[in-house]
Length: 178
Image (cartoon, rainbow, N blue to C red; front, top):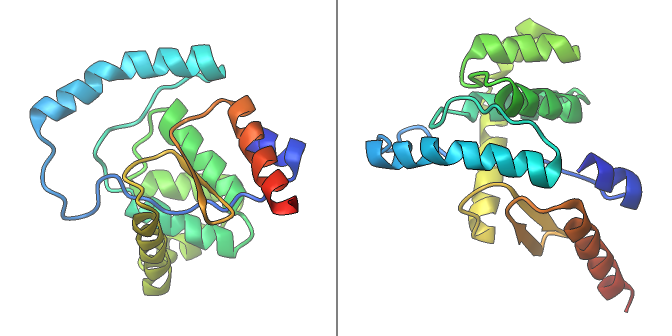
């Protein structure tokens, strides 16, 4: 996304999406086993197709505190830095981003006041902002991530290579100009 921002001047607004919302039923052990078995293939694809090394954190965790933390970071002007740190912690360093201590470390690393960050994790206004993002995702029909929505109407599901995103941006711009 950073490359697309630099090359095409797109604005990125990260939105909340929970894969395992609080209160979700327990994960079926057979399903969890399939996910775990597929991870090596996912890692190989990330490396081969995108040049990314992956070492994902635990599956099936409650990410709501991390999402609320993102809303706080955005309000402090540090949304992109928080998002980058969070994604790096989970997808490359296998950190448990459900753990508030891990989130506090990330907040401190990017320059957020840790006490204010910790307090924000229980802020009902920020929690409502996360819920609003999730409702928007449901309105778009999203059932998983990654997913990109351009101009609030063009959905591109799944991880896509940079050239595919460039084509999408250029097609959307061409449509807007005609």
